[in-house]
Each structure stands twice: as C-alpha cells, then as structure tokens.
Image (cartoon, rainbow, N blue to C red; front, side, top):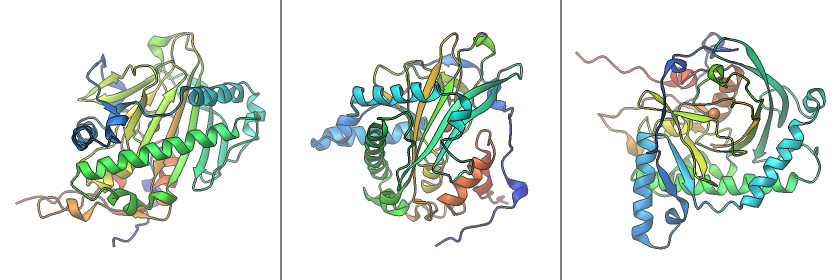
Length: 341
Ligand SMILES: [Fe+2]
C-alpha cells in the first residue's frame, strides 16, 4: 500500500480572494449537459441498467458533471431543508457565528465569508458547514428541522453510494470496489450551504473561486435560483436543471481513484440579480483515515499511477486550509510524467 506523504506548509494552496484563469472563460448556454435517470440505474431490467451505467461512465469521463432525475428525494424534504436554511440565514450574523467553531474539523461551522466580484469588491455571504457522517452534527437553531436535515443527508448518501456502484461497473471493476476501497460505510460526508445576497450589478457578479471538490461526489441543489456554472471544453456552462433535478459533480478523490480517467469537475457558484440565492451542497468522500490511491485494476505499463496517496483527512484539511483555485490541491498529489527519450 502506498504511504501517505507530508505536504510542506509552503505548498499549501493560496488563501484569500484568488483570481483564476477560469474567470476569463466565455459563458455559454449548453443544453447537452448529460442527464442520468436514477430509476434506470437501479432498475431490475439488466438492459436498462447496463445502458444507464454506460451513460453514467460517459458523463463522468466527458463532463465530470450531470443532472440526476427520478432520484427519489421527496420535494417536501428538499423544501423543508430550504425553509430551515432561510430561517438560519435570517439570524443576525453574530448569533449565527456562535453556533459553531472555526477549525476545519469542527462539526459545525457557521458565519459570513467574503467573495469578490469582477471589479474586485468583496461581498458578504452567509454559510453553514456541517459534518454529517459518520457522526451527525446539526445546530438546534432554528428548531424542529434536525430530523429533516438528518433524513436529507441519509438520502443523499444512499444516492451517491448507488452512483459509485455504477461508476465502479462502468470502469470494469467489481460493483463494490469503490465502496470497499474508500470504506464508504464510514465515509466522510458534509452538508454545506451558502447564502448569496442579491446582486445589484449582475454583470460584475462572481461567486466562490472556481474549484474542484475534495470528495468522491457532490450533490447540489438550490432554492430554484440557478447560480451554478461548470467548465466544459474551455467554457463556462449554465446547466439549467429541469425542476427537481439534482446536480452532481465528480470530485478529486474519484479522479485519484480512477487514475485520472474520470476527472474532477471545475465549478463555481455566483450571485443573481435582485434575488437571494441559497445553495445546498452535500459531499460524500472516503473514510477520513483511508489512504486513497489509483485502483490497481486500472494500472498497467501504459497507465502508471498518476497520484500519490493521502488520507482523506490530510486531503480535506489541506483543501479547507486555503481557497484552492481550479485544481491547485489536486496538483499537489499529481505525479509528474516521466520524459520519454
Ligand atoms: Fe464546490
């Protein structure tokens, strides 16, 4: 097994408001964003399921992003989560900040952070970050929503486990390969929400720095105000999800595990004119103490290991310690290709 490496502090990703080359990409409306039907992926009809697995593999390889329909998360549950967040972000910022701690491993973190628009002006944004698995944490304020948050997080975890089973099969691996290699039953799951204020100058709006996520897969939804963009073929794409669809990103740990065959997706969230936007992001990754390395079944002489192993805990702490633009964090564990004579 590959040993975990210690990354020197000077190699930590940049902190603060980071400018990125992705900021200059053109924005396009693209209606060919892959759509995966979860009911077909879990179908008892082998032909339907096989077709859905092929489509899932293509989406992971070509986009690292797809829309998920017929996923089974009740709309009433999704709305309940948004109701809770609406009340939470209406709390005074000082009170919000007292609900949690400041360390990246604190189970509850709340407060306000800043992002920049295109002219460099900082804008305040409310946030909450919870660790919800293997231990579930959630503030008791506002009251009466804890059970809904627990149920939503459980549903999302089950969906991602099923998607990862399909991903394993799409790579020609055993269906439970990723689950076992990542100790997914004890997987590290987070629930993150950001509240973007209305933007009086949408032409200048930017949001969080373009980045890839640290986990295996991320599921994103919002309050119906679509403000997520993803990079595809050198352009920013507005995915325009159909009503009720969830957005799914493939993340850094999946890129490492698949030795780069399925690449993590670069994305960003942003403000929208005259309307508050609340995003709901759920990330599911390996167990914190598991060292993640490329799957041996995907390696051969032509495909040597492209990443060194880190534990999920080391990767997550580094990822959260700054504001890594693009794939700055993943680049730290990438093995340079040998020059051929
Ligand atoms: Fe993200």
